[in-house]
Image 1 (tube, rainbow, N blue to C red):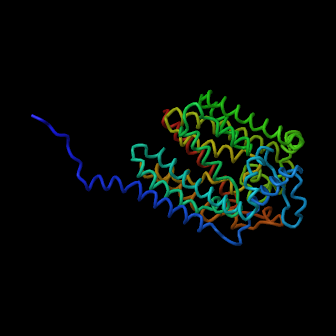
Image 2 (spheres, helix red, strand yellow):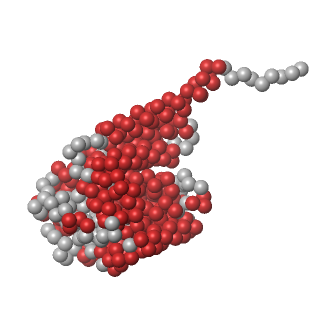
Image 3 (cartoon, rainbow, N blue to C red):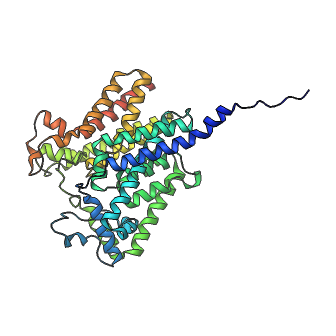
Length: 403
C-alpha cells in the first residue's frame, strides 16, 4: 500500500506566501509614517549641523574641534566626540545638512524599528518571527511618543542608531565571532557606551569584552592616523573637560552630576557627593546586572547597564535616554506577566515622565533650574529618579529571589 504524504491545503499555502509580503508592506508603511511623523521643517537639527560642519572640516584638512567657531550665531557648542566619529560622519557631510537630514531621518526610523523588534524577540522568544516583526515594529513606532526619541529626530542625533547597534550585538544577533565588534565601534564613536565593555566583563563574557576593547582601540588608531592633531587634542585635553558638551546644570542633563548641580545651585562643592553617588550606582547597579544575567534576564541586564551609564556619565542629555522605550516595554511585560502593580506603576512613571518630557515642563534657561523647589525638583529630575527607582526595584527583586 502506498501512503501519500499529506497535501497542504492551497489556502494555507497562500496565507503563508502572503504573510511575508504583507509584513514587508506593513514595514514600509510604518517606516514611511515614522519619517513623515518626525519630519518638521522647523526642527533644529542642531547636532546634525555640528556633525556635518566637523566632518566637512576633516575632509578639508581643518580642525574638527574649532570648525563651529565659523558659525558664532548658529553653533555655541562644537564637536565633542572622538576623531573617529568625524570619519563616520564624512558620508553625511558629503550630502550637506539638507541631504544629511534625510539620511539621518531614514536611519533613525530604521533604528527605532530595530529596537522594537529585538526587544520583543527577547521578551517573546516563543513567538514566530512574523509576529515578533509585526508587533515589534508597532512597539518601535510607539517610541515617537517619548521625548528622548522626538528629541533625537528633532536634533538629528545618533542616540537611536547607537542603541540599536548595541542591542543587536549584546542580545546575540551577530555571528558568534563578531560579537563585541559593534560595542567597540559604538564606543569609538561616543565614549559613554564603553560602560557596556564593563558589562561584558561583569557578566563574564570575556571573549566579547576583548573583541569590543580591540575594536575600540582600532577606532582610536583610525582616528589618530586620519587626524593626528585632533587626536592629540581630544585624548590629551578635551576628554578631561566635562563642561565642553554644555552647562552641567542645564535641565536636559539628567545624569547625577546635573541633578546635584541643580539642587546645589552650581557645581562648586558637589564633587564628593557626586562621586559617592557614582560609586554607589556602579556597585549596586552592576551587582544587580550580574544577578539578572545569571538568571537568564539578558535584555534586562543590558537595560540596567544603560541606566547605570546615563546616571554616572557627567552629561546625559534627555535625548540620550532613548533606552526608555525598551525599558517601558519590559516593565509593561513584567507587570502583565506577574500581575504586579509595582511594575505597572513604575512603567507608568517612566511613560508619563518621558512622554510628557517632564523636565522640560519646569523653569529652565537663565539659570532658572536653580529656583526649583517641591514638585519642580521631582519633575525636573524625573528621568534620573525613574532610573534610580528601576535599579532599586531590580535590586529588591533579586534579593527576594535569592531569599
